[in-house]
Length: 215
Figure 1: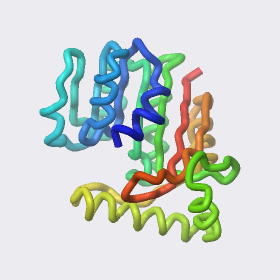
Figure 2: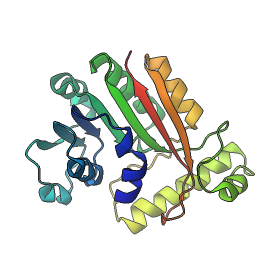
Figure 3: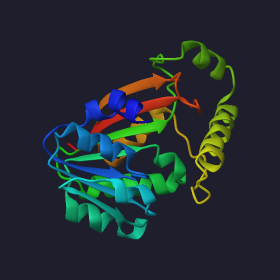
Figure 4: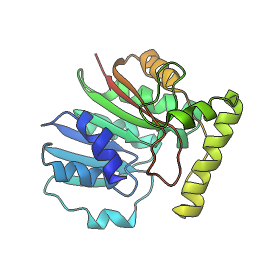
């Protein structure tokens, strides 16, 4: 994960401002942002505290447990320049995804950027990695693609990582669907990347990345 974040997510994070990591989990991405030393402040939130939070050290780093009902008020308080959200949205129901995105649009200041990494595939862009796997994957219909991704995600979280409390509604969207959802909320899309199927992950779901801005 650190290598994957450093290759694909960290370079998309603008330097100098406050980063707000939504659904920070164990804090892996936060630690990589700290190591980069190019952002003024980092705030990580999740619905449950992870033991690894105690190992994250930084002068301007804070971790906080935040439930959905308090999410908007925390965003309004923090006013981040950048929001990172990695492998989080597909653990929400579809309507909950829209509520979180709506809160982001309502609370963020003009020019704020969102960097989103998701288990997602594109129907229009070629993969940056794993062309053969992509071709095999696309032979299935859309319903079965969702099932394949869901089974792999369940194995990764419930068996490999032993996260028994991790929600797994399997609410996946294509890269094009994610673009539409963000733009319907009022955001503009700066970048779309279909990262494809990385070779060095135990659970190999397709990966997509979006960079979004509030105009």
